[in-house]
Amino acid sequence: QKEVEQNSGPLSVPEGAIASLNCTYSDRGSQSFFWYRQYSGKSPELIMSIYSNGDKEDGRFTAQLNKASQYVSLLIRDSQPSDSATYLCAVNAGSTLGRLYFGRGTQLTVWP
Amino acid sequence: ETGVTQTPRHLVMGMTNKKSLKCEQHLGHNAMYWYKQSAKKPLELMFVYSLEERVENNSVPSRFSPECPNSSHLFLHLHTLQPEDSALYLCASSRQQGPNYGYTFGSGTRLTVV
Image (cartoon, rainbow over all chains, first blue to last red):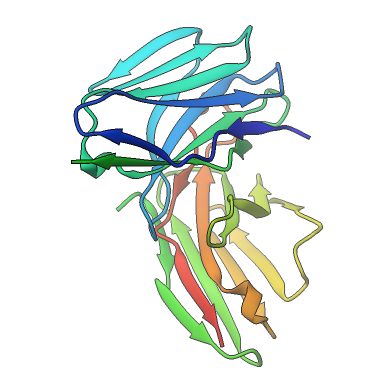
């Protein structure tokens, strides 16, 4: 069983703060890591992907990967109320081509 | 538009009805998926079609029947559903081989069983 664990939250931060979302995974063979954002009643939207150890930045979003610790995180700088959503961590296990395993998601609320 | 189109967007059906959900992808992907998402619950993988091979989640009731006539189209046939089947049904597609760019999801079908 390939596990992807996230804190379910809710995580609440004030506008302008940094929101930190965390995810751990069980399969050491995992190769690709993704963060999806899902607004209430909508479908998940891919916002970040990361494949190598270290940081990857895209605008206000930074994904961090540490394969040795089996840990991936998403930082959202200068959080905005429009960032309020559920964030899903997804991991592609190395032994199953194309298959993603999703965490339960972390609900983020950014208050003005 | 994400390149994955699902119809209908909303569906209300009685427990004795038969209906079908449709998904079409224009991304050149070769794997397609059906997910169920109930309120306050994580995504639940129902079916996978990759390279025209079907992989099932054995916990999915037989009242859900998938069909994948080609790599661009995916259907989910529904019959004699129960109220607890009310949920958001999501279709996704991906490239099974080569670099993995994750899934692209459709907008989903909001299903209500009455």
